[in-house]
Image 1: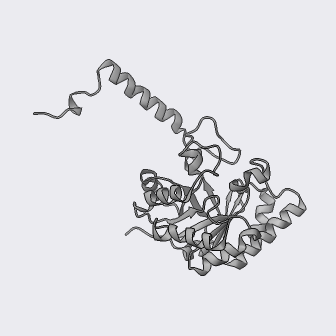
Image 2 (image 1 turned 90 degrees about the horizontal axis):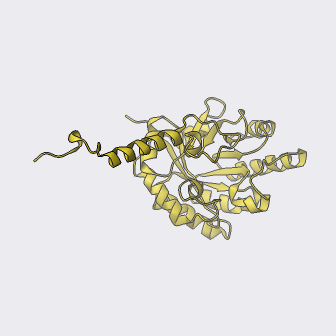
Image 3 (image 1 turned 90 degrees about the vertical axis):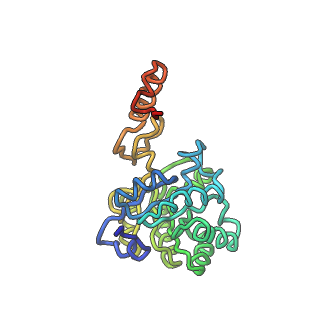
Length: 267
């Protein structure tokens, strides 16, 4: 019987077992990553970039995210399914935040949501949790704030910035989040925050001391020749494999060798 991962399972891994999180945005990929025994499938708003071709996550809407989440949850994965709350789905008001978070559970079948930001969104986080919707936090480089940051840059450099990150992490923990993503922060800072928290941290570009790691699946599979951040390790080079397969198909169509007899129906 396939195991199912719960929020409590993730929290109980703190200090005992590293957490594996990876993104997925469609049913085919969800089946594959779930067969690989990951702990968490994240339907990230990174879908706006890797699936839709945008240059940021800012154009992603709730309807986009609900659709991609539904694609994943229809496969009934054993992994915990968490969905990103997209830009402007929670920033404007607490009622908006609760209503939109609820859509992910009610319409899309997710088990929790991820929200970017610290103290500035703490009331939204608290209200969502009061509605019995689990929340994963996200600090450091929060892509929805890319213009405020002046680009995709490493965050929490310097003593004051590191202290602010830690204060925000503790505030989110006090608000009731079950885990915290740390993105693009110096490894020593991530280590200090991880040690200060009772909940698990999940790093992306935050060094080896977090309680888990997350990567965008297209990045770690080497599907884009033009994009390879420093923190990404490519475990495959699918761009070349897929291109070569399509070229072989095209060549066989053009020279008439596909379809062959074995690909045809008989009378």
